[in-house]
Length: 84
Image 1 (cartoon, rainbow, N blue to C red):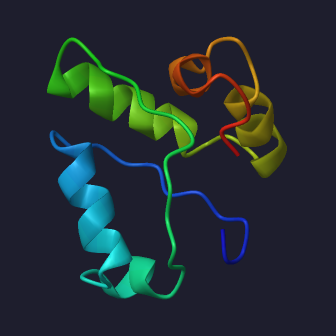
Image 2 (cartoon, rainbow, N blue to C red):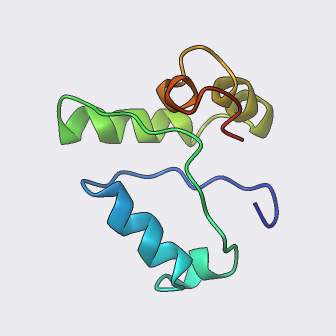
């Protein structure tokens, strides 16, 4: 939110990860607090999750924003509105 950047990464425990980031436990992410989820995706395997992560890291800022606000964003459906 601080500089309109997005963190894209794999984790098996998203709640713990975002708490750690917002507590400043990572040098990179501590400079951009606060963090919040704009998308969460569950994948069948770690391998598939890492492939997805690699793909997302190639997205432009515009592509990320379009995805966040698209019907494909499951988090958006849960929240019932804007995730970003």
